[in-house]
Length: 371
Image (cartoon, rainbow, N blue to C red; front, top):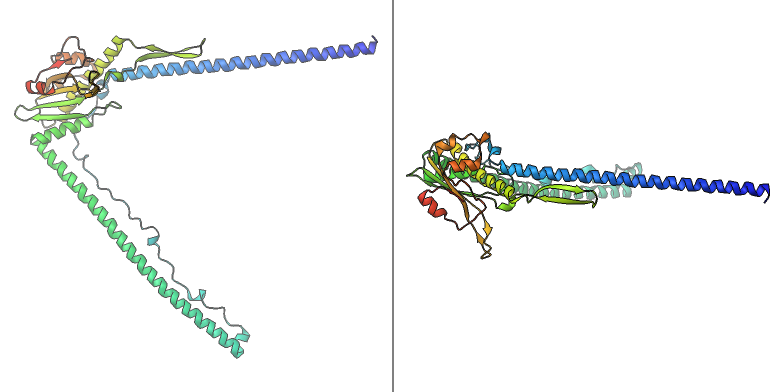
């Protein structure tokens, strides 16, 4: 092999080695990028799992502390704020509010006559005919414009009458509602049955439980100054079944840690007891006229009876307390389950157990039981 051939072979080998080194370096770079992306994705998934866990914990705390969240709420019924303000939509006439510009004679007349049109008889006559025809068109346009304006003004007046009628109807409707509101407020202050019941239902309607659905109904017994309230409680499935979420790097999966039955029961019991105590406080604090001496709260759930497949409304708990006892509660450090126990409930409340409603029986006898 000649020296020249050996030189070419050496150069070719060097180029190939450089290509291989470059390919290996690119491969390592790509592998590093893949690992970095995987590490970033794993970090994001781990953060997502922590965020899920925090949300689950926040939800559990919110449900457990439903009573504490009511601290500082003003349950007094502001009758003035409940007054209806009539809707007063602005009058909108649209194009009817804009008069159409009147026709201008100059837009119809031909241009001023030229010298020849002024001195040559037949050209002068033709110009005068054109001018007379333009004037006639102008007169017709002016009459048509006047009619259109008359129609516009008529439609505008009719639209204004309709708008005034809407305003009057809105004011009349608001006046009727406000009159009824004033009457019910007076009947509450006079301790009339419908007035006290309305006050209680308004106070409970303002007791916002966030996303927890809770309807209520109140019945007042004037002779005993006792108010009986039926309030809807959530079912047990409102408590998150998962306690936390963790990310498994090896399988790239999320795994839930199930909440224990005891934990779910504790949260649900505190939630239901908290809603009942909130109900007692809402009624007591709203009753500024001191029309109520005793409050009975019957908490029920809307659910499906698995034995029949039909909707049912079992009562979970019923409790009775005097207004004076409720006023003395300090909810900042109060355990709602212990509070209901103090009002005569069982030592070991089983709020998740349901049975046939005995609301009417309890209302009649004023029992204080917790199931």
